[in-house]
Amino acid sequence: MPEAWKTSLDAAVQAAIKSAETKAKAEATPVAAKIDIWLMITHANALDARNYQETLGVVMTSVPRGPNAPVRVGLATAAEGELVVCAELDNLKPNLKFPEPNPALSESPPLYGAAAVNLFVPTQPKRRAVLILSASCDALAPNAGGWGELSEVHVVLIAAQREVDGVDLKRLAEWHRFVEARGGTVTLIGYGDKKSQNVSLKVALLRITHMTP
Image 1 (tube, helix red, strand yellow):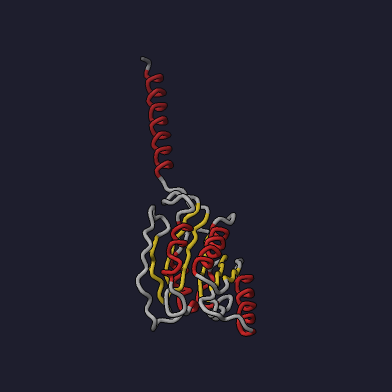
Image 2 (cartoon, helix red, strand yellow):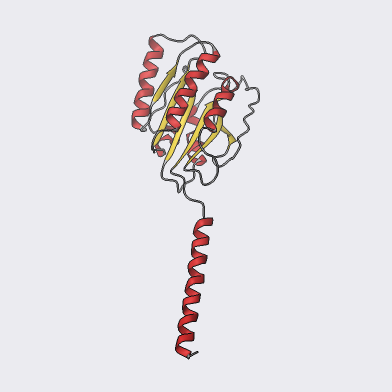
């Protein structure tokens, strides 16, 4: 074989090998999710997350799960300034088991805004936070405690006790102002039996998690 042909053939073989290696590496690299979503539910004196455990499990598994899933959903419980992760974004089979809440702990989303931001992957451009709170929780200021760093924050308020009066309507209006500034929505689930509340919560969370990024 002439030396020029041999050199040309060797070059072609090396190019083919390099192309195959590049393709294999690309296929092995996790694809960035279209959006990451964190659900954060109060688990303290104002709201007992155990009452909504089954519904949260249904919502978590309503999308394909795994590191390469286009929509990744994580879950954390919140009490005062602490967030406890119950299911990571890429957890294939989330196993939700909440302990008994500490009645001494209060509901204070201003205290865990920075922690909420840290749950998200910094390089992920599309990040959606969903706060599940009691209807008695005071509204956040639009940029309070780190929440201003998230472009999309939704709020679901659950009336754990009878609390519909003028003060609550004012509070609801304040929540509307917060979510408008944060590109989200606010949903109020009225007081009632836990079965009815869970149905309403499931509808609300499925709507929010399946919104087009």
